[in-house]
Each structure stands twice: as C-alpha cells, then as structure tokens.
Amino acid sequence: MNLIEDLQYRGLINQMTDEEGLTKLLAEESVTLYCGFDPTADSLHIGHLLPILMLKRFQEAGHRPLPLVGGATGLIGDPSGKKAERTLNEKEVVDLWVERIKEQLSRFLEFKEGDNAAKMTNNYDWVGNMDVVSFLRDIGKNFGLNYMLAKDTVQSRIETGISFTEFTYMILQSLDFLRLYQNEGCRLQIGGSDQWGNITSGLELIRKSEENAKAYGLTVPLVTKSDGTKFGKTEGGAVWLDSEKTSPYEFYQFWINTDDRDVIKYIKYFTFLSHEEIEELDRKTKEEPEQRAAQKALAEEMTKLVHNEKALEQAIRISQALFKGDIKALTGAEIKQGFKDVPTFEVKKDEEIGLIDLLVSAKISPSKRQAREDIGNGAVYINGEREQDLQKTLSAEDRIDGEFTVIRRGKKKYFVIEYK
Image (tube, rainbow, N blue to C red; front, side, top):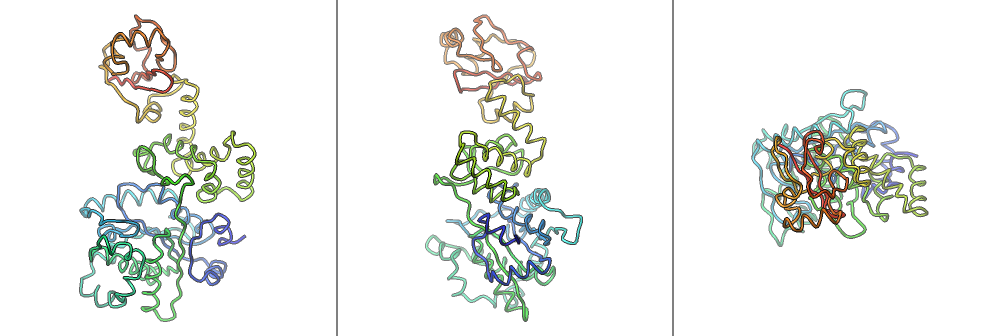
C-alpha cells in the first residue's frame, strides 16, 4: 500500500490537487513538502497534531518535511476560521513563541540524519527585510482583487469586517510556498482544511512566477466530535502539547475519555498503529465496548508520542490510584498532576492542625458541627483512607512526600492540603 492509499484508509485526505500526478510523484522520488504553524501562543495544542503527524508520516515514507514557523505571518494574523480580527502581538513575544514551537516540532521529526532529514524554516527570513515597494510590485501584482475576494477565508469576513493587514495574509502565505519552491525544491504544501484557499493561491503564484513549474496541495480534514462539541477542548480549556500547560495525566485522560463513536476515527487519524491492529480494535469496540480497549490504546499511543514512555507510565499510575482510591501510592509530583484543578489550602510546614479545624478552615465543611457529622458518618477520607476519629490531628505521617495531604469529602469532592 502506497502513502496516498494509507492516508485515504485513515481518512486523512480532505482535498488534494492532481491526485494522479501527486501519487505518481510520491512513488517515484523523495518529495520536499512543508506545513506552516503560526506562533499564536507559547505552545501548540492538539488541534495542530494532525498536520504535524502528516509531516511525520511523509518523512517515514521517505519524503523531506520543512516545518515552517510563521515568524512573519504570526505578526499579521490568519483570518481563516476567525469571525473577528486577531489581536496583534509584539515581535519580542512572537519571537519567543517561535522558539518554543520550534522545540515542540523537533520532538516529532528527525532533523539530523538521512537524506530526508527535516529542516526548520521561518518565513520572517524572507519577509522581514522585504520593502513594501518590492512586495507590491513583485508579489502583489500577481493577485487579482476579484480572485482574492472569492476565497472562502475572505468571503466569510466581508460582512463582519477584515483589515488590509489580514487581507494580505493569503499573499504572504503564497510567498512562503514560492520561496520554499525556489530555495528548497518544495513541491507540496499540506495544511488544515481551512487552508485550502491559501494553498491554491500559493500554487497560482508559483505557476505565474516559475516556467513549467509543477507543485501540489493537500489538506487534512477538520477533526470533529460526534456529540457536536469542539475537538481539543475540555473544561480547563485547550489541550496543549506543553506538559506545563496540560499535564501528561490530563493529556492521557483526554484521550481515554473518547466517545466510542469517535475512537476508531481518532486512532486512524493520530496513531501509527497498523491497519490490522486498527481493525482488531474496531472489532473489540463493537463487541466488547465495556473493555474500552480502543480508548486505552489511543491514550497510550498519544501520551507516548507527545510526551514519553515515562510520562505514560506516570499517567497510568495516577489514573489507577485515583480509581482505586489508593492516594498513598502516589508521589508528590503525581499529586500535583492528578489534582491540578482541585481546590488547594495552604498550611505552614511546622503546623499540626486538628482535622475538624482543617475541614472548616479549608472550606471542606461549612461548620464545625457539619465537620463532626461528616467525620462521624464516614464521609471524610485522608489520602484515600476513611477517618472517623473526631480528635484526629494531622501530622507528618499524613503528608505525601512532606508536601501534600489529600482530603476527600463524600464520593467525589477532593481537596489538597499543601504544606509550605
């Protein structure tokens, strides 16, 4: 099975230009391709994963990826998929984000070895020093106003308003494709489905600028959820690739909670499991849905891929400890991950505090009377173990790694006591 056939099996092709020509080219030679990532935050999120992993799939098939970080276009703002103008960021901020995103991209691609080693690019290198007259004469003259107005990315913003700054984004991205075609022999651009208009504009610019040029475009589908909610969002916000913004445990939990209706689609999209492995997981999902074999495989593959084996082991350990209520099995670092969004109350390190006073001070129980009732009724747990001693005073023995005590009231209400 060739690369295009594999991508089609996985549902990863939304649109492509000249399918026959691109399939033939990919079969006959190593193709240089690129995908752009604008630095709109200090981390990429899982909405970026599909195109990143597409670059990886192409590289593993023998092709050469050029991940492009938009140091210039990140200063302008892409109108694609946006209902209103983006807030412009200072160059120093964008430059910092560029470096962080470069580091994240380097985890997925091989940059050092082989004829198809990846190469990091930044469009500020050719846009940053371009003067406005050269831009208008050499590049802008190739774009008709009617042609640009007909593009979906512009059409969708006409009524709400689009600035000249964002209007020119299409031209700048087209210039990226032209420069990479000229300087790196790049023949293919890939991107999300919302980038189709920008990609075809780049192809048009190459056609006008280079005699007998032949280049191609390919987009991946928009990732959706069967329940209608937005993919990649949780109650805490976006699911980031940065472990400081989204912990490996939270990342693992995002995937493990995938709906049965979506799980096989996501396994095809995001993992590198073989077709045989995917078909077996599909069978298990249909015949033994309670086992959640596909969800476990998806969560494990994605946590290993984005983080590492150690982070996966830690995420599984936290999940199992919380499921069993075995809080004492966790380390202080694991408590930080597993209870990141749980209410926290600080106690001085040298202080020993009575359980009743603590429940009231930390607002775990609303009053001393209620605290006594909660303890007496067996509704209070310290580090996973029921505590019914009304005279209980928390001591060093109740601290995990000397840093935390986890209090549970009832079945699901957790609170973390942190010693400082």
